[in-house]
Length: 78
Image 1 (cartoon, rainbow, N blue to C red):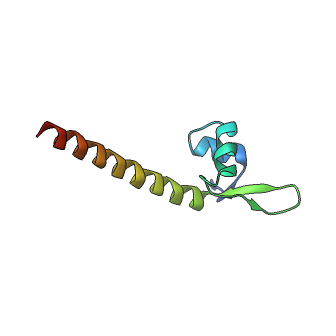
Image 2: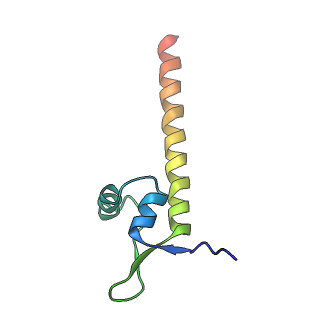
């Protein structure tokens, strides 16, 4: 039986979010991505559910920005 882990490493989290680890680290340090969970002195992981929630937030923000741009373009045509 295959099991998809809920807690993943930084490398896996960055890949899951579609970016490199350097950008992922930068965005986490800027509080623009979810913070990690320290499960031991040397083990830091990210919760996939937190990443999924953040993806939904990013999608909503992107859709809102697209709507604003389209409304701006349409109002300029009038």
